[in-house]
Length: 453
Image (tube, rainbow, N blue to C red; front, side, top):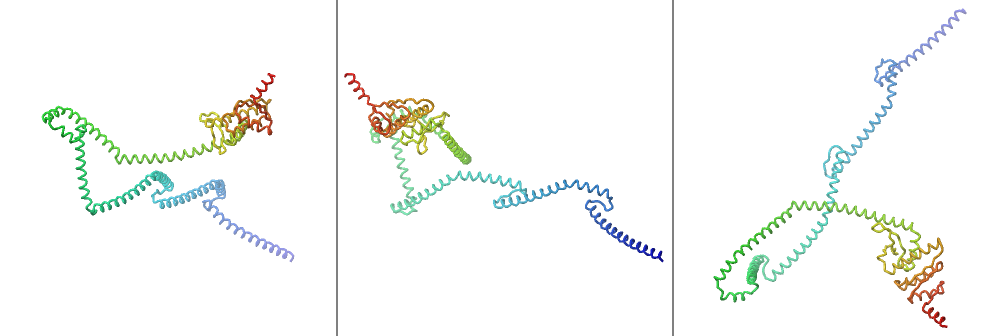
């Protein structure tokens, strides 16, 4: 009984194990079925048959893995191609819209169509420049048309006045005008005959010629005419040659007035006018650039001006009573440095354009500035001048005397003059500055009296 129970337990245990093994086997079978499906799908994506070996499939998978970068490049290239195609489509749409708006036909290829539109735009700009060049002639033609309309209206008024004056209808004026023209032609012919007779008669009147013809022998006159016949023929030949020369000149003139040549000349003129406009624009730009550059150079020079020139400019402003704001250094047309006076409004005045007084004041300002600068580096020196104010007016002379008095505080200044106005200007400063006025004439008299004593 005990053995049976043990065997029964073993059977139950084995049965349970068998059932578990059967369940596990069924699970493995299901897993194998699922793996087979996924394997078939995987090898199908690799373009391999379902019965391919695992080793072969692994080799192909490794190859696809190594080709992933190339596939990425291919995909990127395809995206670029798609973007290029989209851009080309947009360009095609834009060129089609422009072609429809401009009323022109373009090629199917968008790039070629864009080139054609660009060429058409260039031609349009050229035609516009030519049209702009013809604008003055159009305005002139319009003005001539207006003047012609005014002249026509004036002529119609005059015609109405003539009809009223002669008492005839406008339709009868043509016949009346022909009669008047015939009368004027007869009168002109008569005058021409009279003029010919006077010319042939050395300026004598007809009555005088008739008196001279009385008693003349007709045969003798005919003989004289026959004797003059060779000279007449020679003159006729000269006249004929002159007429031929004139006709040749007229033919040449007509050749110049040929419409074909005129149109060509007009086209050349318009082309030259267009080129002239372009050159004028370039000249304007270059002139503006030159002026800006000159102004910049002037500003740099003003910022880095020589102290001597700056001091001379300040002294020049004082001596001219503000007529000049100072001096500046520039470069002339030959590239040489020159000094010019600077007005308060910024205008530049060369030394040659200055008056004699202004020129003397400029030179004096530079002399005083040089002495001041020398005194800063060494001992001060005396400034001796003789009638340097001769070309100054009273106002500028007084200002210069005041400047010399101020300058005399640091340097000895001796000014000789025989002008009373200069002496009076210096005497007026006796209470303001250390100024001493010495009258040499009185000093000479005093010395003479002292010696006599």
